[in-house]
Length: 170
Ligand code: FES
Image 1 (cartoon, helix red, strand yellow):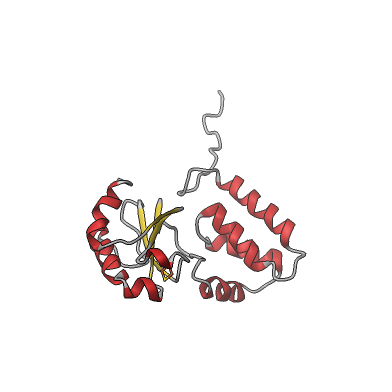
Image 2 (image 1 turned 45 degrees about the horizontal axis):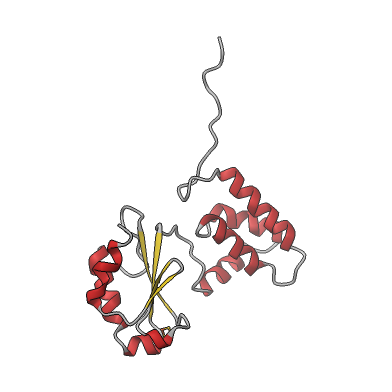
């Protein structure tokens, strides 16, 4: 009788790509970059591009391959705000809290988003659809206050614009 149990490829929670394929991409990226001085940051960028965040298991691999302590890697990963140690939602909302945006009411925008999504800042909604982040200047100060969702930039906003924007993604 044929063996009914066949090995299923493992999948990742973010995007469904096979975990093994992601790991192979990480290994290839490390191989390409590990000779370079300061390889850690580009390697972490690659890991985050591939997984959407920096999973602990993968950081252990990076640690072994780059011959750096895990503590050192966590030190770098937590220092830079663009790295995330937790999975993000499908849509990442970044509200600029830089000076120009703050003066023009970014806090009200952030509060309204937090209220509408029922998540704290840096939180992800229960359905994994949205992550709400506060960020530094996004370089679009002329449009203050500004938020981005993925690559899309929204400017000159008031808190009352929030429901309409969220509707685009629901
Ligand atoms: S301060 Fe918000 S885009 Fe520059």
